Length: 515
Image 1 (cartoon, rainbow, N blue to C red):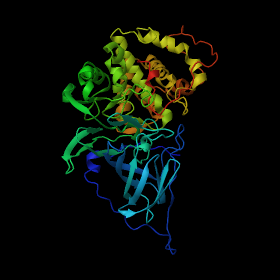
Image 2: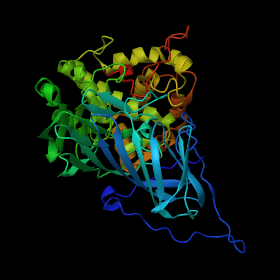
Image 3: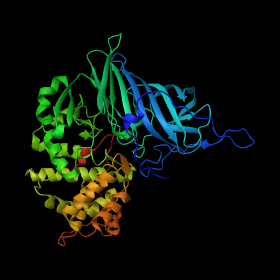
Image 4: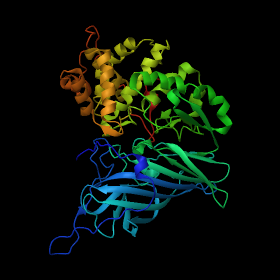
């Protein structure tokens, strides 16, 4: 199955209106007058989540229109997708779970539909020819409190937030739920008086309706992977401040905790400045934190999640002193580049996100003289310790770039990924390493990339074939020798030390070396 690594058209060009596009007359088999095309495959063949995503089309844009009722706690919704087919289709599917679908249309004509497992199968009135643009509209309702096998909803006392990573955006809206199919997003969020609603990107307007409710509209200026969408409703105050080079920063903070959270929020400008010096200008139109108005461990089993332009956090975590939270805040900020600007082409490529986030988070920590959770105060000492665990982690959690759904968020993808990057830097030197990093980000910005893409960039920039070296580190069952440290040794493998984690579907940043 192919993976799509592509640049999506700018959101501003795609989301000017919600008007349906017109599809021309479908091609017909010569002499038969019959329907042409085939049902689109209900998978993109992801090696970690093989049922996730759908083939036969790419999504250009999403318009999500959600209205929250605090009395019923339900969300009434319309999702409008603009797609372009990559094959002639008699039927196609979207990922959808736990959504009460009421109607589906394709190009303004009613379409047949059925829900099966985690798919919404759609049969348009006429087949869609290859390379056709079409608008798909789905009306539905959702209950954020519904019990599902996995869910993105985080119910709060006054509303909700969402944490779609890795495979749960389709519990909030029907979509092609895979990071290889990034798209433009705009939002219209309607809430009663006294509540605020916020989503990715910039606020483009507010409207007071006749019944006293307020409709907020947001638009992202860059494409977003479905796992990085954020929509939140609650009693929030919006705190604006200026970042480096005029970057607008906005934090979405529970009103009752705004003063207490201010010391953590005030750290962001300095974090951005430090990282821009290493990775280049911040890649999006805004950034900020969303301390979700809940610390319920049943609904929120992770520390932070890098939803694009608005990082989700447990509020209590951010109430700690700077040396306890600073490197993790850096970890989440790094995801704006690694994970958001350049998304993983498959979930097996997750180490590109988490390894880089921990790498720079640790650099930031040790520059400030803060010890980590294991008591180490230098990068080299932490890497020597991690190197000793290399064979054990490969035994328990697989190679760095070969996870499965159970161990996807184990430490191997985090600190194990850091060890790979450290080894690369040892071989090519610090200056070439930083050139590799920026070249990779520039080459695949606003798109998705594979591990092989990173290997190719590293070889190209360094002027040496690093494919064998990096593949040994990323896919080998034994830990290679560490360049520059012939004295480092690997501890022999014993019984399993890394027990699989039970996850609700969020981000296990408790595994992060930056905590």
